Image (cartoon, rainbow, N blue to C red; front, side, top):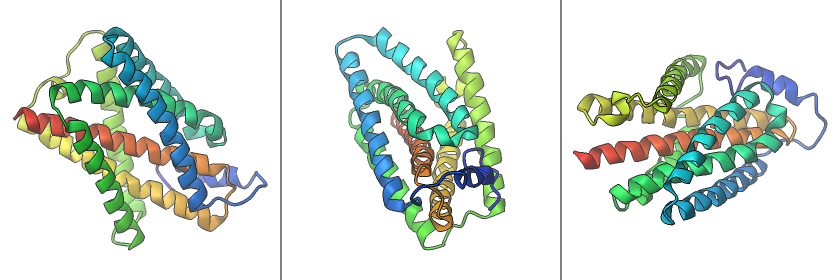
Length: 244
């Protein structure tokens, strides 16, 4: 199975068979995802505590550090998936600060938005899982190619925007609530949702191929990346809609 997804390449399977251990399973991957989620929640609570106690500058530092750490780890794991048992928990901890910081700020402005975003994110994950399991949406090569091109474009845009904002340069997409920006937000959220199909496909193919259980961490990491991305896009979209 050839893939354009940098986190789910054929090379991942090739590296997997160099190991000798029990095979990967859906249950094992789910358990790893729960562990990573717990780690992320611990970090999120720490960030929430500092936010509520008025340490806004410290929270901003945690968020910036989380973005940078998460970016570095994602790049490493794209090429060294065997390190996922060690780096995936660090990624989860770093992203807990990012997600919590964003959530705290938006919850202060729009009461109840976090619960709405969490509910919509979980609903979207379940719907995409159902569509994948029933074969309504399949991870074809064309599907992969379109998604990877779109996601890489978004990634480059976000990376450039983050660097510019560090230097105090405002990006209209993040500061202006126009119909065009709302439309772009919806499209990006849709792309993030579709990316779940690639995550599910990787896990399913990994189980079918009988690759070693070490890659349960990698599958859980990939899925967590997408769910976090989806949540951030959904909560941003909800905040835009509430503003209007």
